[in-house]
View 1: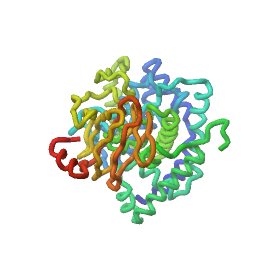
View 2: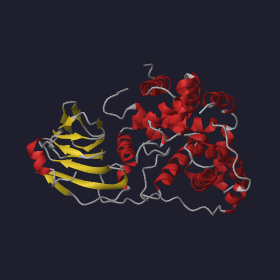
View 3: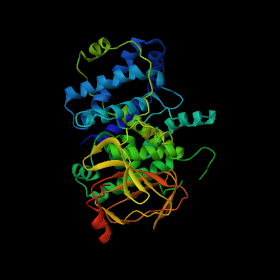
View 4: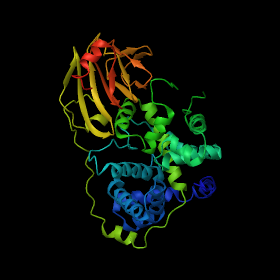
Length: 201
Length: 211
C-alpha cells in the first residue's frame, strides 16, 4: 500500500506524453489492422493492465493473461474507438473494467454484466464532441487538484475490489474517515469537472 | 445538478470502476440509459479511471507475451451488437440483453418476473409491475434495495418517483410504494437479502410470495 501517493507524482510527469499517438495507433489498428501499431500499444498498455489486475490481488501469471486478453479485445474492437469521445487510456480502461468483471464472474455465472461503453447512443452535436474531448484535459487537471489522501482513495476505488471497510483496514483508518474522504474527493471532482460549458454555476 | 433520485456518488464511482455487484450494475445502467446527464458524469469518472490506468506504475509482462499475443491475432471480424434477449421492446437498452423469467402473480395487479442477470449472493434483479392505485405490501429489507422506474410512477414517504428516477432503500426503511400513475408502474429492482413482509397479512403471504 505504501507508495500509492508517490505513484501520483510519477503519474503527473508521465501522463501527457503520447496521448495523441495512442489514439492514432488504435485508429491504425482499426483501419489497417496495423500489427506494428498494435505492438506499440501493447508495449505501453499491457504492463499497466497487468499492474491494474495485480492491484486487485491477482498473481503475476494471471495478470499477464488478463493483459493479453484485454489487448486482444483492443485489437478486435478497435473500430469502435471514437477519439472524439474518449482518449485511448480511457477507452482501454473501460475494456479492462468490462473484461475484469467478465473474468470475476466467468466460473460461477456465465451471463453478461452490462458493459459500459463510450459510444453512447444519445444524439451527438458538434459542441458535445468538443466538450467530451475537453473533459480529458480537465480530468487530468482535476486529479492534480485533489489532495494526496483523496487521490489515494480514488485510486483504491478503481484498482482494488475493496469495500470501504476493507479500504479502511488497509489504510489503518476508521471507516468514517475513509467514507468522508471518498465523499470529499467526489465533491471536489464534481466541482472541478461537472461544470457544463456555458453554465457558470 | 440534482442530487436526489439518482445513485450516490460512491455508487456511481463503484459503477465506473467496475466494482459494483452485477445486480446493482443492471439497475444503475438502466438509470444511466434514461438520464444522459448522469451518464455524462459517469463518462467523466471513466476518464478518471483512464487517467489512473495511464499513471499506474507499470508491471513488466512476461518476455514472450507480446509474441504470443501477436501470434493469436485473428483477422478482423465485424463487431456485432448483441441480439436482444427478450421481447419487451420498450425496455431501456441495458435490460434488452437479458432473458426474463415468466411473470408471476404476487398480489392483485402485482406481477414480478426475474431478470436473468448474474446474481451476487442473495442479490438479484427483478422487474416489478404494480397496477394503478395499488400499494405493495409493507416490507422491510435486510439489505439494500435499488429501484429504477422504467414507466409509470410511484410515491412513498420520500415523494414521487417517475421514469428514470432511482431510489435506494436500506434495512431501516419500512417501504410502502404506491402507484400514482394511470398506467402500471414498471420498475427494475435489485434486491439484496430477503424481503420481510410486515403485518399479519404479510406473514400469511410470506410463505407463498417469493419476491
